[in-house]
Image 1 (cartoon, rainbow, N blue to C red):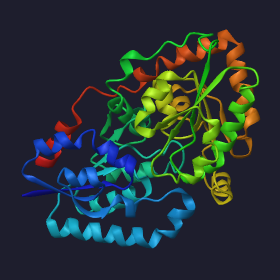
Image 2 (image 1 turned 180 degrees about the vertical axis):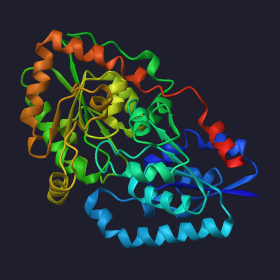
Image 3 (image 1 turned 120 degrees about the horizontal axis):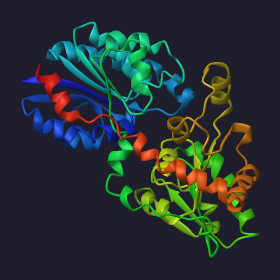
Length: 373
């Protein structure tokens, strides 16, 4: 029986995998899959050498503390590939670890399918040199990435629909129009303070300051999306100032109901772009992470994925010392008062889903062909 290594080192990686893996399993009944993933992948038959809950980490400082663990994992996975005679590996996102693993495996003749390209265009552009030899095929999810990597010598690059396009496939057909002034009876503001504890702790108080200030001039209904793995302590103090609470699996309903959003930087800001919801983007990390960002990371471009794929600042961005409620308030008030600007934002956002469509081909069929070659 053939074997295939698959690595999804964090929850988002497993979610990416679920967009192609169930069909891939059907196409490869003669293949055993093993590696790193979560409960959903295990249910689909993956033999987990590591569970992602023990594998993933958040932020630079936590990654540093787990470096010895990652080096042991690299060695163990390489040894398993050798022992099983594995010829194909699928590595999903999780950039630093997976690129090191891809380099090790490619030297042993393993065909590496690298799903979700590293954001080398943002920082560590030298990763492209490694990808030229370490990847059999590189799959990109942002519209400009395919050309960017191909221009730098990566031979096989395939553009795929952004995973959110698959996640929201059935919900993007009935996006509310939200014409200018539709909030005159009640202004509905959605708070998306993040999926990590430090994000909620740092941003939710500022988001609440914004909505409380808006209540002085408007009839405001505040919606909040809570994430189940975040401690309730981060939310409880502010819940009295929230009118509607949504669980994370109700985020589409929340985005469709509201007029504007305040959101932590991350994939969710692409979700609000897809659902044409004007959003103020914020990010505030620890002092250590801020120091690393300013002194190690050279990327100084936009941080919201909606802005990045459009190539312009549609969503205002406030980072670190700028991420305060009075700044968010000024933006929301300017949108409420300026019909021309608001309509331009809405026009731009309508193009978001078209920019994320990817190439026309079947990912699981392509992967199955590589596995069987």
